[in-house]
Each structure stands twice: as structure tokens, then as C-alpha cells.
Image (tube, rainbow, N blue to C red):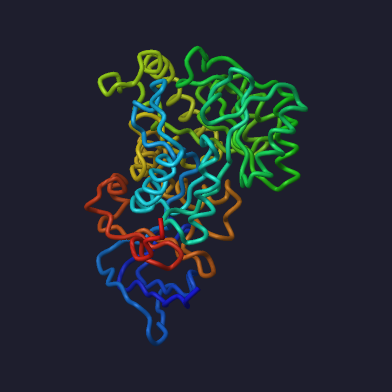
Length: 403
């Protein structure tokens, strides 16, 4: 690999996560890492970007994506799945769009044919330009459970769940996804219904944990959430029907909530876009309760991190930052929303020593904004306000990749 040219971002203000404020100063990037903040002396030959008037925030982290999916409702139509080769090509395009939208790290929680694992390797090897990918391979669900036949494999009983988790790790999964309840997009599956038993979930968590993998649980129903938290999962995805007991359990165990408010919002209002009627009806049924559960969890002090469920209908690659806006609309301050999409997300993914904050020694993952997100968090979603993205000390679009 050729030596990476140092880079200095001059004249802007960078987000200081501890104080939750912007501090005027330069950012020096050497060998893909932040080497200096504030008054810096750039080495000879360093590239420089004029960031006068800009606001620099950590690269955003989306803890729940399906990056091989486009968000096109037609993908839900039987018989419409493209060939593996075409889906792989589109996945690379989705990765580029995601990075261009300011997302420098994602956790992919389920992809047919484990395309997410291949993408993670391609990005790491420089073959594809995209965000850092923590890939879960395929999720693990019960027979006929949510996600079966598409983003999840089926298993029944503790021993089968153990084997399935082991096989996903063998395939290269860097995280594990278990299904603790039904969901919205699988026909004939009720999101209010629990799925895996507590014993099955515990078996999956044990296998993942001993391999040093975090565990995300798709959990919408109250009983499913409690089963997953008791089993020791790292995060609850969605958390539509949280009651007081479930919230108390999450606080006691330090379980994160990744609310994915964006997914049901688009589904509930997407009939005219071609989203199937069964999904629209379920989306409308969960939306109000979903928001209320998120707000109660925030008020109680549950730890949260941003995740979009990108890939669900109308939830497109590169538009991920809309979730941070929704999290702010329903209870977080703008500064806390930046943390939910940055430092807190990195903490959840056990990447705090790698990324998520603008600190010396961490990866130089940076989003340049022409507007102050603490004044208007919606600037994260305005293309005109996105002045540039740096990942690992390189401006996005400067590496290209070979695919």
C-alpha cells in the first residue's frame, strides 16, 4: 500500500463530545488517524482543506442497516429478487452512497447470501469505497419467523440456535442478530408475537459472547424484548412495545435501544409508493406505540444509539441521517443526537477505541457541515449542507475502489 498523504482540515470548528460543543481549531490526520486538534503543525507535503465556516463532526454510525437492499418496495414482491451478481454490484453502489451521506461505519444486521460479509471484506481491502462494515451475515430466526427466507436462516431449539450462530461466525460474521419477536415486513407474522424462547436466545448469546461478538435482537413485542434482555443481548432493535418492567431490565443490564424510528414511518405512509397493504397496515399499527416507547425509554435513562433499518421500503442508502433527526424530534437534544449517531453508537458496537469521536488516536472519520447541527439538526439531511466526508483520513470519492 502506498504511504497515505497527511491531511489537515483548517479553519473550522470540531465537535467536542465531552462538552457537547464546537471548538475552533484545525484537525490533523496522519496515517488515517487524528494526530492533532486545535493548533496543529502540519508536516511537509500535507494536503489541506479549507474548512472556514464549517462544523466538523465525527463520521456518523448507523447501527442497523441492510445495505444490500435499496429501499425499493418492489423488493418485497415475490419473484422480483435480482441475480446474486446484480445484487452484489448494487450493494457496492449502496456502500458508496452511504459513505457520501456522511455514514462512515455501519452494522449490517442481515443480508441474503451474506453479501454484507463480502462487502465488509471488500471495503477493508480497498476494492469498494464505503463505510466500515460490521456484518452479521444472516440473522437467526425460528422456523417461519420474521426475516426467514431472505435476511435470516431458520433454527429451532437451543442446540440449533447454537449451531447457527457458530456457523455465522465461521462465515465471518462480526456481530450476531437474533429474532425475539415477529415483525412488520414478513407476511403472516405478527410483531406483537414473541419468537425465540428465552432458552433459545440465551444459547445464541452464549455462543456469540464467547467469540467476542455483540448481539442485536430484533424485538418488538413486550415478551420478546424481556426474553432478549434476560438472555443478555447487547441491544434491542426497534423496541416497539416497551413496558416499565422491560425498561427497568434494560437499565439494570445496560442494554442499548436502537429504535429505528425511520422504518415504520416510511412503511405506514407508503401505500402509494407500492408497499404491500399487509405491511402498511402493520406499520400503521406500530408507529404510535413505537414512538411512545422510545420516548419513555429516553425519559427513564435507557442507553440509545442510532439505527435506521435502512433497506426497508423507502429507507434508502445515503439518507441514513434522517434517523438522528427523528431521535431529536422525539426527545434527544441536537448534541445528544450527534452522540447517538457517533460516540454512543461506537460504544454499543465496541468500537470506541477506533471511531465515533474526534479524539487524537482515533480514526479520522469526519463529516464537514456548512451549517451548525446544534442550531438545526436537520442540516444533516440537507445535501447542500454536507460539505464533505473524510473516512480514515481520506476524502470520500478520492479512492474509488476497483469494483
